[in-house]
Image (cartoon, rainbow, N blue to C red):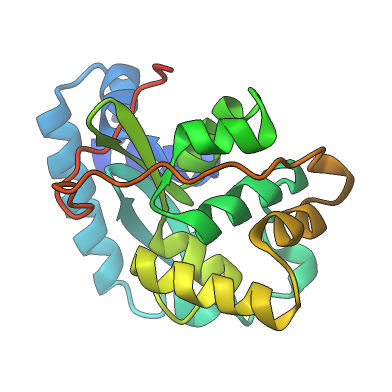
Length: 214
């Protein structure tokens, strides 16, 4: 039996992983160049788009690739079978949505040192982008975050406005909403002053951070 093609291996790997993977991770795993991985992923993406009646799509979420259910089908999946965000991540992702573009240092001030692990997990799930702003990391939500929370917008500033309106309608501050979502997993959340965004910072062109440097 011949070895399966790279496209087939990538499709099965991303499906089995259940979370997003970077080109570098896939390149190292299959011992081929990043360029070869990108070409195969793009070809696989086109193949999946042409499949009639297919339930899954391959998506590039800020440089990380993930296999996911097509948005038009997501709401038809019984809630008991949907992938859930771990409860410990609900408070930090709510804070990011409320304050974005949020400096990672502000999140650390609000929830403590565990913020580093939370941000890393949220980025791996494709829910949060980490972008450079000088020496600072800026945290913003992604389209996948908007789909998960039923937000009608994908652009981060519109998501922030929508999220703040939802909190206000519930009579809650951002910290109170995060604590309510996180429950006992959220711990103590401290208010912290926002770190001003650099005058020349442009989210659309800011470099996305994919490594695990602190």
